[in-house]
Image (cartoon, rainbow, N blue to C red; front, top):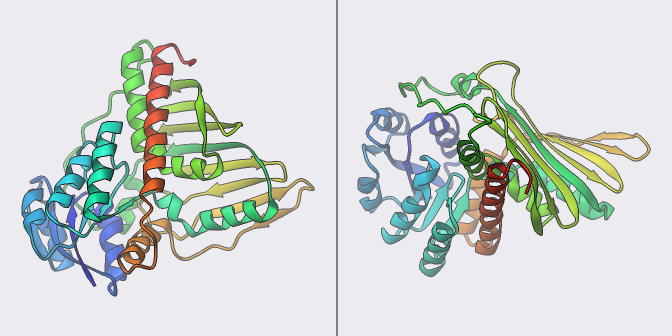
Length: 346
């Protein structure tokens, strides 16, 4: 069993990571929780039966902590990974992204590889059991992917995680500035931030299908907060669209793949909940519809199981795959932001 220290005490930790680790007791045990002084770490620690602190360093200095889980804002991730490596930790689980620039990415990967520190990124869609079945289907059919898209309409997070987590006195989060179509610089910054922090969920899936990034064709910011990006990869067309709604319909998170043989829809559950695997529907060229069986496990569970397998030596540590996914996210974010600054077309 590996002892885990969790840095971050937001609703995602309440709703996802603590319940997941509590269910994987053969592999993990939470021994320390830290946050940035908001007072929530103590409540989380009481739930987990662990120590707590109001900053990260005491957790990193704790000799009982073998695995560090980084569940903090994206801009802190690279620094905390490097600090965990310097502290001699055996493994890091980090919410996406692991870095917001190529310089940060190089430093993180070099440090982890040199110290033999296992690193798993919380790209839960990539670990969803349904995605493995989709890849198996594509390989078995020898289909050529013609286009792919990821369409997101996100309801407020609280609609879902409040149902499955204990109440947390988190205060009111700072409001994101709305998109101003006349302010290209602000719109570009918003789009870049959303790509590295949100589109990064599905970028590894796109790279599984279409590994060679060939450039952005258009990009724009969507009101109130969102993006619409088109790009080419491995000779195919990819479109990523997302909008974050302050109210309205429930969340939609759909990946659509068009091949020479069929059309595949992968409908992921809302974020922040344990709801089993994605729903997959395949419609072939003759109009026949096949629905894949659902799995009780979801990507949030499987990403931690993957880390346990790496630590047991049952799964290789693939730094090259992590690097390729992260570099694509950063390249896409930079190219999309540049296109927004230029009026939407690259």
